[in-house]
Length: 417
Image (cartoon, rainbow, N blue to C red; front, top):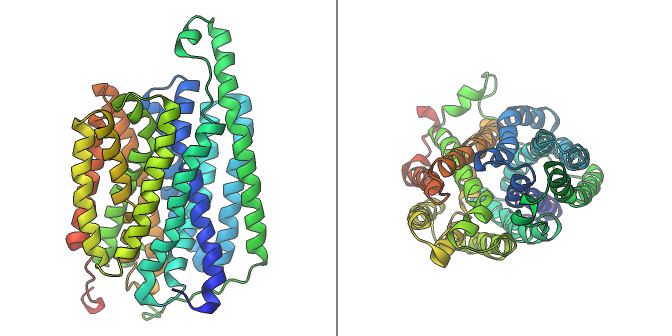
């Protein structure tokens, strides 16, 4: 899979996939938790995702330039520093009981994640033979799937605590109710303190770790390059678009799962949280493992097309069925969308040469879809009073991914650009 000299660096890079996967998959727990604590609408609660994914839009290009000037290792250490700082800010956020403070802390965490993902995704692709790059990136992303399994299960135990019932809260005076909800909101302090400490330890390890700096092939020396030059690659432009819609779909499916499950299947939040981990998360992990294996026999773009069609059908099922059929339709989406991010990414940066780092930044920048599309789904859910109708958003997103896999991934020869 990788040459021997790249094995340990590849292992450390893979650990980053787990860590950002873990913090991202705490968001489905944070959304119902903060929705209750601050008495938010579904649209307002979706701003948790907006705060996280708007950072990808703001920081993606600066992250790319940072990597180009200082290299992967420095970028990774800076990203981990932002990650730790944002985690520690959850403590004053809980103390002040300001929803905006929570959103600011999440934004800072996401700034760090943007730098980490901008570095780690291409680094995992480049640490070894080019012909196994997609397989290698999917393997690293498997640990992201492991985090998706563990984070919701742990999150519901340490964050989504069983507080007073709605009936009990309704009998309390406004000040007493505010105090009770504030106590519930403070449950985030311990978990994020521990998370921040772990990230600091990882940052120290990277400071002393010798990472080989991978040099992309520079074939057009002397020509001024920039964003528009990179976007002249048709398959990169398509990848940016496809990743925007894919990430929007993934965030909608994962972040609203607990709210969706309680409505569509009629289960409580604690049970829904377990389905989020052992159902959604485990399906995502197993899907990534099986998908990575299948890529040894099926071309990545063909597998992407097949999986996108299935996700469109499952999204329709999530809209119009109920009970456990609806619940397992959404869990099925997690299985089949599991290969999409790394596959779109690796196909998008294929044969970019000197534009690889900038192309990577642009694809990471497109993750802003996770900030824009969940509020759209939240708005539809609020207006229709039915979160299931909101699944029209993921359905459309997976249709775009299908188009990328069907035609958009094709590389135009450089002399034609």
